[in-house]
Length: 223
Image (cartoon, rainbow, N blue to C red; front, side, top):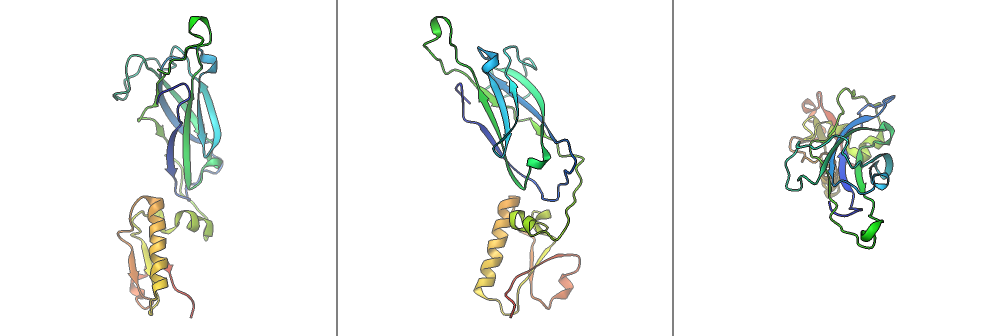
């Protein structure tokens, strides 16, 4: 990214609805980033937001909090970029099934001396690709039934991205509307998981042998 106030780095995150974060201090983020040494550190910041709400801001120091770093070799990196590392906590209550992290850099302008009227946009910054969000240790629990989990994330059927534990039960007299509903649901679930429903089974109401130990998704109007 280039400039004193570049466009934020946006990272889309999708979490299973049954990720149980109750009474958690937050989800740790091992954030690693690089930036051109700022002229005025007091006005140079990196802000992390989740779903549009500010979580935490840190000052960008001219010395670099973590010193020079070579964790990731990218064309953007050179001796003019400082390395920095900071662990942040995302408040768990701010997390939903669909989320977006935003990292916004802001650098101060040079406002003193002969250069006060000339602003050079040679500022660069980046988020290192080896930054991590640690969800280890969180149990999976969700009280069912919960129509909200189904409408937003297709849960519980999407607990397996390929829907390998799901059987779709269609009526004996299948209508075009039934097929349309089924395909719309599968498309929406695939959009959430990022994976097509390649192992879902489709059957009729009389094939009870296929129902054992499966999640049943029944489609069809009551007749």
